[in-house]
Length: 609
Image (cartoon, rainbow, N blue to C red):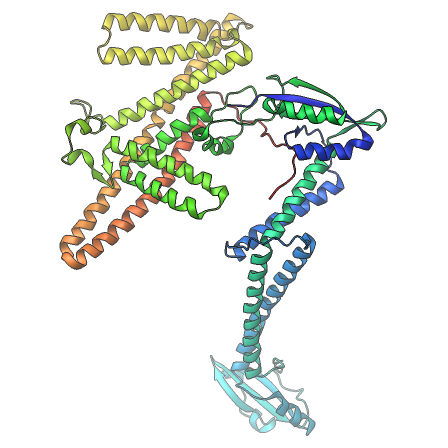
């Protein structure tokens, strides 16, 4: 449900404004109304840029720290010094990474000449002999160069000849240009490469140790920066009045925390006004649900918070998403695996992720129970085992009577009809609350038409009511619904316009509802696919066992079972999360007219680690 909010407006004397903000911040329950528009303040812009830098750096540091940062916080270090040290280490690593390809290039260039000492070449030059290095193709090499320039062939490789000339003075009349070789010999280059690689390894180790040691410190600095940004935003959203003598500020507070806010304001002596939020107000949204529903609030927030005038969809989302997930998994054994995995990870993961493990455990329980109803346990059909008949009667397995329709497929369609009917009920109630009953007649009549026809058709199919009764029921329900759909869909418009709008709505509803209901067959299809794949892995494993013999056969059988079912669980979990989410976000939210454009409640408070 959505917590009721109250609008708070207060005037503060400008000299007391800073201290008053500190009190409000310490209280931590007031959501400040943001009014600023236009260009951002320079200071705030700098803070925002710093925050973006810190967040990017924290993300990189967490990976470099191998996701195991030290918990120590060095409060004496500043964020600027950490950023500079981090950037210096990164620059050093980048420089070393650039040096290695250059050294490799020099090594490749010198390998054809072999390992020689450049000092010897310098000594020859001092003695009046110039040594020059050349390269040319085989066909361009002239044998006369050996006599004219004392050319000495050093190497022949890939159709090229590498040679040196030793002359009393530099050669200027040769058709080819002399090469410019690296200033270090081959052995020196190899030593330089080894030293550079070792320096790179050391630099990476220093960066890793730095990230492990300082990740929490930068995280702490980032939290304080977030607090400074919040404080600056509050100041920018304040409105100066009476030539700056007083400051006007507006905010929202939950109804259940009104007493402590009033006490603070009364003690501070500021002028304030408090009023209830109306449905037209853009009040922030604070969800308040029980422990079970609270686990699913993360799914609601993924789509968008409800408007203040809307209903919180989480209480309906929670049971249906669990049911959809269990249907898609479709295996009681896989549900037990999720329960065990949830309890194991709950002990090892951080506090922020423990709540997610509670959700995994809950979904595992739903999967275990519903998987038993579907009659599947690790790909084995429970219905085919020798179980008591009083247990098998609870299993939804096989065909409907003598038809070719599967019971599980019909169950998926029934769940879809119920889900969409609830969505249409929420839409009708929501429009009535927001706009009044007269303005929501069309929604109520569509609900009557759909639910009435479905219920009447179901009762007639199972012979609860006679054919004559069902015929008259269809006529009455259709007639009453037609009045609201075609004549009273908007009481402020011309009746002929209403008829045209009703026809258009009928087309959209007829095509849309049919497609929406059929979308729920994916629950049956995914559950069936997962069960069949699990059965295939079972057959494959025991075929290998029979073929390989008792000793090696059981080993390979176990490996295939573990690998196959692990793979199947992973794929089933992915599809069991995505497709129920789609059914919720598309089919349910569309038919319930859920907008999801509300603003989350974010109180102005002291940032704590």
